[in-house]
Length: 265
Image (cartoon, rainbow, N blue to C red):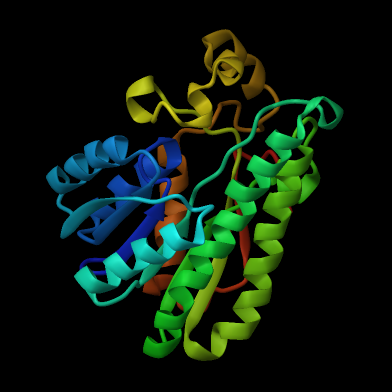
């Protein structure tokens, strides 16, 4: 299927690691202009170089803290200056630590809310004026099945991802008249294959999360998925690229789980 993404201006937040990296490279393969907005500029730069080799129309790393409004505005201003606007925004940044709600510190709660919800709010608001002016745009945000069902040991994260879904639906109603579409993709457990695919700042680099990446643990996790395997970053790219493309021009306000059947809604 031809997605007609060549020449489009695409921002992928958290585009240097795991799912974000896979998305950056997938858009590159479609010959889009890819901006990798990541707080780890060095990791983003590595992915930008990979993207160029894969045929990206251009690939640029821009250091961005999605929790800081000034940083997000500066990144979008940079993209507007280079590319004349933003055609596609992928709100990919996400972070959590697997702990019971009563065991989490307030600092962890606040970080989860800042990264998972405020980051999406900041980036979405920053691109909307330009999209409204051009009467076109696609925003795809990463949700989570945790937000659809309420996941054990992921209470605040689940609440944030539920917020991402609800806000996307509300905005889809508000800005649909301008030709702007907002949709959400919910990955299941999706792990990087190696440390080369992630930043040292990635949640997957944390010691507490490394336990999930052992082969023994992956085998145990796979048993709860009908497809009997843990997701890879590349499993997520097809759904996101489709929703970002004109092939999905009549799709908005939708939530799609790409999670091996973990939830079926």
